[in-house]
Image (tube, rainbow, N blue to C red):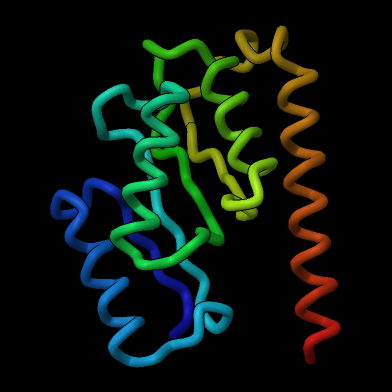
Length: 142
């Protein structure tokens, strides 16, 4: 088993703490596992400030420098979509956060997204670059 899926609110973050401790205590190499976490059920939900605060806390609890998969658990009607998308784009662009970002929003109103098409396409392009780089690096290592 090498895929671990957790969230910042599972048992108030203790699931992330236990996972981080277990991986460390078992001397598991970070590159040998895939770690996913989620964000939404927190103060500020999907505001830029909340996303950055929550991923920093998640990384600290997991005792790692990056996530392989960051999942947006629900659509946030109170935060402008542009703010959320720009925050996610920044996570991809900042060296500390070179991980895949995934949206799990089943109830998105895509008409609202129309004005954000450029931002969304930019984010998808960044994700594609990360995915292809990841697989190229993995192929070269083997």
